[in-house]
Amino acid sequence: MEVVLLGTGAADGWPNPFCRCDSCGAARRLDVVRGQTSAMVDDDMLIDCGPEAPGAAVRLGRTLASVGHLLITHAHADHLGPQALLYRSWVPEAGELEVLGPADALDVCRPWVGPDVPVRFVPVRAGDRLTVGRYDVRVLPARHRVFRDGDAVLYDLTGPDGVRILWATDTGPWEDDWFAAVRDARYDAVFLEETLGDREELSPAHLGLSRFADMLARLREAGAVVEDTEVVAVHLGHHNPPPDVLAPRLRGLGARAGVDGEVVDLRARS
Image 1 (cartoon, rainbow, N blue to C red):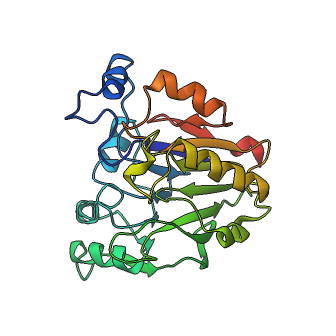
Image 2 (cartoon, rainbow, N blue to C red):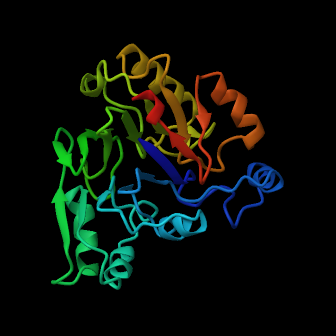
């Protein structure tokens, strides 16, 4: 499995274009620019597609032409830019597309798809398990919401090569019983949001460094994160310390910050 990180930033990116804080200033000086978090898996699956994702793919020299499956975590605007479905429909040879996500997120998409466009919507909710193309997909809960409880999810994805990843953005701390769903998963990689840095008081529906550390500890206790698991922090925002300060703090937790355009090659682990 190959995971291309099209973006690793929070909704407003990092640096925030309108901000002069020390964290944004340091990111500019270090030329560390993060767009909205999204990923492409093996060229045929996209996880979230905010407004910036298609352009990010093009700037990275990638194409979305082979993507046949789109997994949507929720309907917040940085994770779902439904206008991309219209732009895709302008390509006659684009082929079929399967769009999976919470029902409310799919409702946001429907007005952007014409009646003859080969797009199939598949509503999902936490607890579902589906075969999506070549992938085994388990749908997990998120402590996050757009319109109502349960309208945001996370994804546990196993590829045809047996590589298994957890895509966990956006979410606050999990309920105790949620860890049963990932017990002994032994993920090859975990992509875990770390939005708030040292400002966790701003929202209970995101992780900062303290909650990120707690979440990792619980995942390790459950056997979901093991010694060989690659832990990548994503959905990073400017409430974090400057990038060169954040790096050692994450390293102390057994994690690292993802980088826009990075290719996480997990094929050798299969």
